[in-house]
Image (cartoon, rainbow, N blue to C red):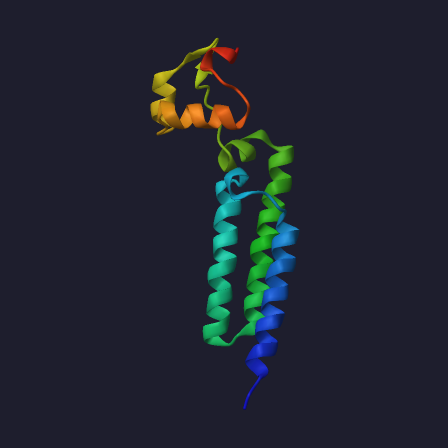
Length: 131
């Protein structure tokens, strides 16, 4: 009985964990779109490694993904246009205690969702927000 696939699976999982740690740890809600795509690509590519049995090529591909992410993260620290490309600009939804409904619609967010997020931050009423 071949147990080679078990060894390769353990190697692949360890490589995935190491690469995700290199990419940086954030909760999913705090990830940029690029970080989310890279994490999804890592998972998908790991699945292909199991199917295709090209372990070292897949690990090299995963390394390229994470290297690409790290390069873009460093570039966004140096250049504002890269940050705008990756993250976008903040959208003001409350100004002087009043909800800006047009901006809320742009974000596809309901007033209830906004209220829930404010409560998570310890803010009971929209009127408590100054900016």
